[in-house]
Image 1: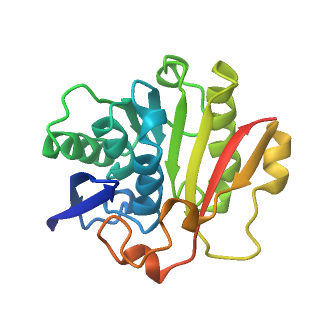
Image 2: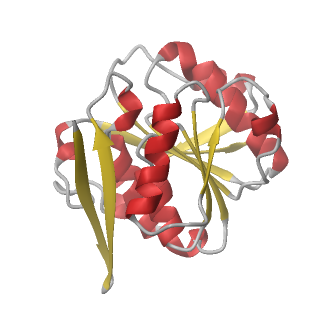
Length: 215
């Protein structure tokens, strides 16, 4: 079943509306998870840093944060798993729905340094919404992030995740890959509101926002 969600972001007299096509499908990357509006809100709030910057979104899925970045003037590359062509196609549909013609969509696999990964440009900002969903992927996600940050040590990885278990932690893996992180309070960018991006989905879950850098 296909659907379309509308998200809206406002700040200091500025307004942005984003259309996101979704597909109800066993591949969970094809609908918008609660962490995505929170990350999109952070991108919107920090759009001055995004304008003209090279932005790569990992595990983009429906690509809400990446679409917001592109609409805010970023040079955006959306990525998702190489063996999930339906998700990659859905990324493209999100671009078409928002009249974005210059956004690249690339298939990569976390933790694998394929030609597609090696060809990714030097990023200024890396985005990842709910990449820390399954603990078996945590190491691979951070391996890919570390590789991208090595290309530009001043770059930042902005990531949100939904708390699912108090036993899941990336602390030791951050040290392994030479990374450090800072937790960003949601209230500092108006993401503690009941309707983030015009949607109430995030208010029903505990969402964390991190900025990860090279040590």
